[in-house]
Length: 374
Image (cartoon, rainbow, N blue to C red; front, side, top):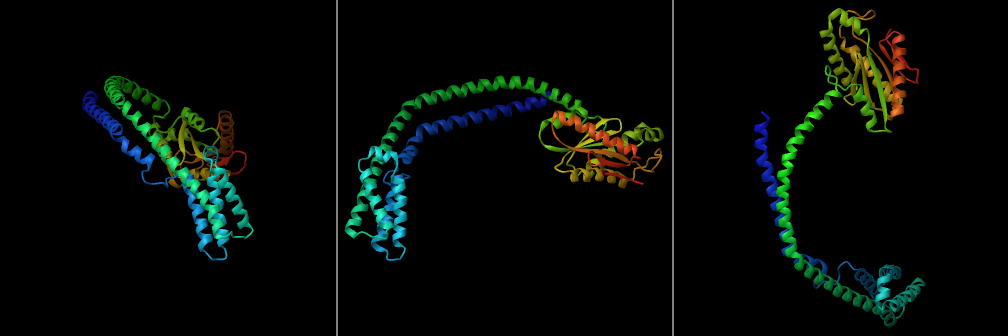
């Protein structure tokens, strides 16, 4: 059945490739043919002196300050004007303007003097005030015009370079287009071979990390999952079915396999679907869950034991109970290779203590807390 599926998929891949490369060609042609107006509008901003230049904003602040001092009569007018002159000064006082424009330093000196006078709440006469601010404003206007001219020159050079290389870009795009088609053909051929081998490898890898009876992970999967995120805080539960051999002896192995699958579902339900489950072999399971504190771990252990108790699965071979029960040992640890080995041993020891105490309960390693049914 696979060959027909692959024959149907091949044309769709071809059309997608053709459409993609055609769109690439159209985009490149558009950018190289009609890019000039956009670049010119961006760089030159014809008829507009505001732009985003520092000089423009500085000039505006100075004009606002001058207007406040000449027209406003409010008590805080001097402070408002002084603030705007400070803002204008800070945008004006940059190395580029100082080094390249002779009017910058004298203008800044005038602004310094005016700023000091305003700081003493002294407002110069209108004639002197206009002189102190109009010279810096004229200087900033000259800077704006010069910057505008420079931007125009940059734009013209850029456009000329764009036109000069336009033909080269189009030819290069055509070469890329043809090479892309060739690459696509080679890629699809190798992809079909690699895809088959990859899917087969993944299938075997998945089987190697899964318990075929219950569908949960096995011991190797548990180790791999712990190593995936070293440093995180996790909880490990080791879960043992009490007197499972007697269960198989009483009801047979097919019934034992069925109850194993039922218990996996019950454990997953008890942990709210947030844990990853593993079958360690025989009647022993493990659960790995996010765990930031001992209380979370204890609640998880208790939930597993109580969920199976409530299910009341018959166990005719149980010497102390009519239903299936579990013994659980838990431990909290920080994921890591050495920590995992120690944590597994601690959880196993806690499980052993539960079994030694009569089974049908749980214990968390290191806390001494255990819950057993009478």
